[in-house]
Every structure is written in C-alpha cells, then in structure tokens.
Length: 405
Image (cartoon, rainbow, N blue to C red; front, side):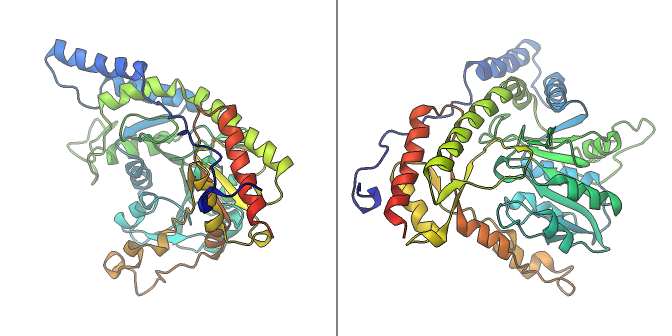
C-alpha cells in the first residue's frame, strides 16, 4: 500500500489543478467597448443603460422568459427579492440550514424573523419535511438555497406554499442552470436571486447579481426596491414610492455578463462531464466514498462536488479523511459547516432585540451538522479533464484503502 502524503508519502498529484480562466479575450473586448463608448461620447458609463438592458434580456432568454433586474451582488439579490415581497414587520421567513450569511441576513435587515429549516440529512439543502416542521401561521415566505448546484426538492415545498399563500424565493447563487424535473431552478418559486460574482458559474466581474421572476408585479417591486424606490412603471408618482437602497448593477459589469452567459451552457456541460465520470467510477470502485445524494430527476451543475463518506467504515473521522485527500494534491474543502445559527451575528442580542422575547435564537440543526460531518467538498472547474478525473478518484481510493477498518 502506498504511504499517504499526509504521513510523508508521495502525493497522487503534484501539479496544480487547471485554472478556470473565466475571463479571456471576449470579456476584455466587451469591457473595452464600454470604455471606448465612454471616451467617444465624453460621458462616463453608469447603470440602467443599454448594456444592462441587453444583459437582462439575454438572462431572461436563458431562463425561458420572464423579467430580470441586475444588481450589485448576490446578497443584494436576496435582499431585493425579499424586499419585493413587501412583507409585514415581524413576518416569519423560513431560511436554509447551510448557506452563506448573505442568504439570511437580509431577513433581519427587513425586520422579519429568520426561522431555520433543518437539512435533509443526506444533503446540505433543506428538505420538504424539515420545512413543514417549522411552518406557523406567521410564516409569510420561504427561502430555499440550491447549495453546491444541487436542486432542492421543490414540488412538495411549492405545494404547501401555494396552499397557505406563502411566497417562495429561490437562492440560485450556486446553481445557475441546475434543473429540477426538467425545469431550471429559479423558475419554480415566485422570485429568484442569483450571484454573479467572480467565483460563480457565470460572472459579471468581481461582484454582481440578478433578481429574476416570471411575475411582472414582483419584478417592478424589485426594480423599485433596488434603486431607492424610484417609481419605475408608475408614471403618475411624484417621487420615490418606497424605501430602498442603491443596489444597481453597472454597464461595465453587464457587458461582461452578456459575454459570460453565452458560455454558460458549455461551462455546465463540461463540469457535468467531469463530475459524472467521477460519480460513475466511485460507484464501481469505492466502498466508502461517493458523490453526495441528489434529489431524483435533478441535474446538478456542480459548483463543487459534495463527497459523502461512510464514516462508520473508517478508522478516522471525516475531517481526517478529507485532510488526507487534500494532502494528495486534490482541491478539498474539509468542512462546509456554514450554519447561520452557529454564527456570532446570529447569537448576539443586538441583532435580535426586536424579537428575542419570542424566539429561540439558537435553532438546533442536527441534520445539518450530520450532513457536514459526513461530507466534504472537492473543487472542480470546466477545464478539468481525464488526468484530473483519474487523480481525484485515485486519491480518494488511496485514502480509503489506508483508513478503512
């Protein structure tokens, strides 16, 4: 048996993994065109201009119709989507068990109550059963996040939401192009939020986001909320009609986004090819390690690969296993324990002064903890090929053979 790299042996891979090279000549030309137009006209480029309109148009074309508003980050997209719902102060909003803080903080910022639904223990995502358990008469919205590019089981959630007049926001920050029963995520709920920062499936530069909906009324609510309440589509209004912030995208970012979204299907196809090849090989060659469970009739876009480990078959815990795989030269995130209720901001009384008498701030998420204790993440990108597939599988098998009981 080969000695593990973490114990001083030779690693499976010594070369760096391929870079994404997300921004190339096409994006450079798009950006330079915006600068050339500004230089020629003598006017600085801003926002809500022709490039942003084009980006929103091609985004909606990708989604199969609807309405889109470009904003300046994924967090802003969640904030705007929630603001578009115009919920009463104190409304309960069900939020994901594992997510970026920006996917939950907007709830508090709008004086609503975030209520965490635990994860399906097989996944980082909330399951329908867990969502149902925390529903109350004060629940007015549900935020679901398709973490890692894996779709949430939407049909049961939408069924209960419709029966109780609850609105659903899809947080698609990590799931551009993922599918649930043939439908693109983001088209199933009432309104959706996308992040287009530099690390996502497609990007509009360093930061960016999109609010998307098929509901025209929600779209105009969102557009007003994202630009200080300006009276878009209200010709008789005499001024700003609601409180909001300046969360606009900009012309330079939008021009980059137009180029990027044209590449999205290719990016997704290449990522799926890599991940599915790894999944197939692990199913045949590994007793202990597999790609994490996914809802049936879904297609992940693999923003990362969630790796499941049968810890009861190991001599070590998941963290030690993941660290050993990382030492073999594989891009590993050993833990994805991003549970909002464990964060200092959640636990601090200042953020919760308005509701601390009624709500238990320390929501218990045993399933989310179990999921993070039995999974780790492997990074991949669309430029991985056969060598990377072989190295990832071989590293996993090497560590498995060393650590299995």
